[in-house]
Length: 404
View: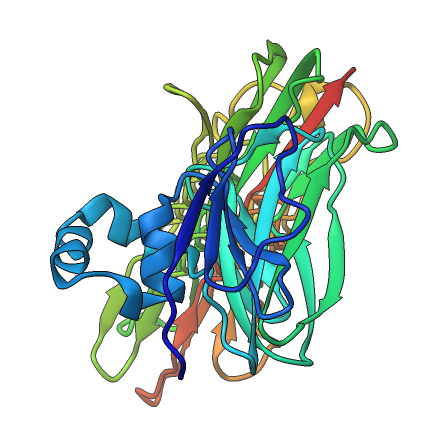
């Protein structure tokens, strides 16, 4: 490779990019962008905030003196920029420079972007570097959801030896005013939203079960409690707001193991939370059913037969419909005691004698916060018994709605 000297230029006029720049020449514009000339005497590899010496080091390393190179390599800040920006691109590779913004200008540090099947995170300037083989088709899609904003997606083909800019620009989207979260997620709220409401349902408690090996007949477990609900209304937004959403998991049902003569209790449902800044809004999970009584939770469950209990005693004392309204979807139904029906709002039915040999309470419906149904354990006079299982509680849900 032919070595040649490097000439550095300082921009004097108003133009940001020089119209031509010879191979081995570097120019610095007034805004700090650095340009290097290619073999066609055209400016390439522009990058802001990088010194001309670093550009020279990356493109023409043989032209630096040993002392200059040592000084540059000892500068941790400059070398971090060199490693991060990778503006020197091989002929068989393309460097995509992905920029994520809101409304054209507002940077989104920490934003998630999906590139084909790969997920990447933007740096503090809303930038991501992604290298791809020349000729590869790449689709860049915003993976961080912005309530009240669009989800931009761009497809580009990798150009060998080039740095290709990709802009994901989120715009206001007034066609949607509500989002339902069935799984935990971190999102952003558009700064143009005037106010918003949050509705949370905790996970349902697991159904109970018991074993009575010395008794004839069978025994009935109580249903799990439905998750509690919480509504927060007319909350204000200031700027582009980060929101962390956790959807509570359903509790596990109890299990009776005849061979070990052992009952493993069920568990409570997990809490659903919405965290905005330092403020946390929460809806607790429902309690698990026990060996004879139902767990306490959001709403009243179905009555169980025999010793089976129901949830919701006392219950939360208010409606469990979305946003506390008098109509609409009902959530947080209690699980039915063994032999009984689950409560409206996703509660699982209790187990019955006529089910398969392992008598299982049915699970609460997913994303309703419904409690699990109580399990049934059957004992025979011959001394043989079987397993009994309470149903798992249903997972919770979070609903966010907003006004412009």
